[in-house]
Structures are given as C-alpha cells and as structure tokens.
Amino acid sequence: MTDQVSLPTTHRFHQWLHRTLLLLLIAYPLTLHLGILDNGSLLPAATILLGLIWLSGLSMLANKHRIGWFFLSGGGMLAAWLYTQAGDPVLVLKLPPILINGILFMLFSSTLLPGKQPLISRFAEIMHGHKLDPIAIRYTYGVTVLWSALFMIMIVESVLLAFFATPEIWSLFTNFINYALIGLVFFIEYRVRIHKLPHLKHPGFTAFLLSLRRIEWRKLI
Image (cartoon, rainbow, N blue to C red; front, side):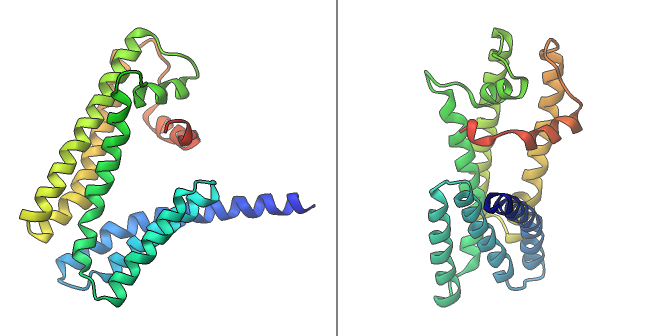
C-alpha cells in the first residue's frame, strides 16, 4: 500500500518541478530585459535565477544526481552575497550566458575526441533504435562539430557583449536573439538531415520535437 501511494506522489513532485522550471525559464529573460529597459531593479530577475538554480538542484537530487547538492549550496552562497552583502546583480546576471554556453560547448566538443562517440551520433542511435551506417556517422559527426562551433561563438559573443555593449544590447542578444538563432539552426539542420539521410525515418518537425521529451538524457551524457 505504501508503494502505491508514494509512486504517484513522486510523479506529481517531478511534474511540479518540471512545470515550475519551465515557467521560471520563460519568466527569467522577460523579467531581466524589462528591468534593464526600465532602469529598474534587477533583483527580481536575480531571484528568479536563484529559483532556477535551487529547483534544478532539487530535480537532480530527485533523480539521484549528487551534483544537485552543488546547485543548492551554490545558490545559497549566491543568495547570501546578493541579499546580505549588497552584491551587484548585474555581475551575476551576465555570467549565466557564458557558463551555459561553456558547459554546452564542453559537452559537445568533448565527444569529438579520439575514441569518443560524437554526441549527435549517440543521440541519433537512441532516436532510431539501431546503429548508424557510415553515411549517417559522418553526417552526425559534422553536426556535432556544428553545434560545438556555435556554442564557442556564443561564448565569445557573450563575453564581448558583457564588457563592451550597453546593457540593453547585451540583454537583447543573450535573452532573445541567441535563442532564436539556436532554434533557426535546429530547424535548418533538421531540413538538411532529411535531404542528406533520406534512408532514415524522419518524423514531422513537430513530432520530432515532441519525441525529444521521451529521451532519457542521462544516456547521452
């Protein structure tokens, strides 16, 4: 009886975490950009960022990833610095684009090393449920290189904008234009993939996006 009660409760907890994280992800760039445009306080955006860090840590712990403790403790130290030491939230808010693109660059580029399977190749095998043929292996290797290069460009861009651009331009690029560019590259690559790999099964773009939710991402890392 205990198991029958605990499983739905755990499922509901995961659903609540994912939905709350999604809402915060949507609210964060909007809150930050509006705060910058209105010359208002950036603490609301910093608070949302802290919520994202803490909830991400809880999600990792719920999935038995010990790194979640790092997120929780790091968020706690960041909160103490912001709210008790009168830290400048601008410095904090300019770091995430650099860190996120840096992590993604390392995640993709590290799989291009000798003896490693390119990340997109691994992803394609999971999606299709079988080993790739040589043509698909070459293509997915190239796509992994493409994403690695894109994230490296965004690291350089984020650093340059943080130091030399106005806050408005920095926010416009890091909170909106960069995400639109990622979406555009994602869509163009999908169309090219259909042309280059016609022998593989390709669902519609919307169906492909929905299928991403069923991927066990831990298998890719």
